[in-house]
Length: 374
Ligand code: GLA
Image 1 (cartoon, rainbow, N blue to C red):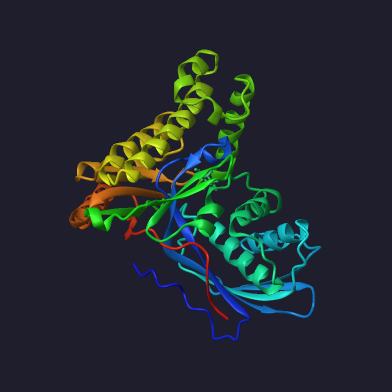
Image 2 (image 1 turned 180 degrees about the vertical axis):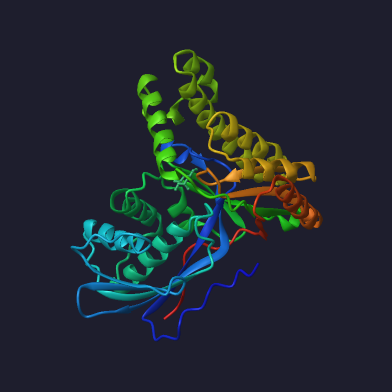
């Protein structure tokens, strides 16, 4: 699969910025529980070129859809362009004087696959608008602004992982993010040096009821934190899990809490393994994360369960669904020379199950938001 970003039409542009999609190595549905996540950036990019306009209006053209959407600060935009309009809104809300602009975007981040194509769009548009405005907003402050666009303007109650990954990730590293303090650590994740690769399988499973189920999971966690009298589930900690579960009557809520608390611990264990230079040790943690998402958080679907089982049977060190769930992608940690074999096994399992053929590609951790021209 090509990872060359789709090309923008010839400029001139005042600036051109690129922001990547992401995969989350581990730490799922922990971000909105003030917990830990460990994503890395994909080589797949959304590229945005911007030209300043004299009038206070914004025009955004998509190379993918061929559409151009024009809006002013007073208009509520729907559809894909809402992610760009949300950024204009969030920057203005934060007191920035956002110049009018004509934006053109092109992307090779797979859409609707749980690889954060929306965060890539938000972050690339934000970088362009801040560049045009000459505003010196530190990188570390940008994910909150983009998350606000998504939560308050687009209306999706997501956490801060995706925008953080798209903005802050570094090539060759995974981003260890504490979603409460927003402290970050760039953890070296050089798979090739250890003869390993990450294979990403896009299950192509249709995302159904994603937003409703996501919001329901989040609500359940917030209710549990209230009952347990902690600011967020992160405060339970692995050592406090049994006592916390004993205080909850609702069996479903107990399972949700168990996922979040054990998943936070798996992120910490993964970071320890990577710091020790032992990427292979991450395999069982990935597989345990998948079981927890399947059995306790109940966010997997047959396609992703099939991909994980087939990858493991074909010799992957570990595999898990990545992203919000109900479809999307699986990542498998494999010996580099077995990548093709594992991919073939997953394809075979999909064919046997009567599922549509998946996409699959090997990835290495790439660079977060960066300026590429103008
Ligand atoms: C989506 C959300 C993130 C995070 C993940 C699950 O990608 O946008 O904030 O909650 O799901 O880990």
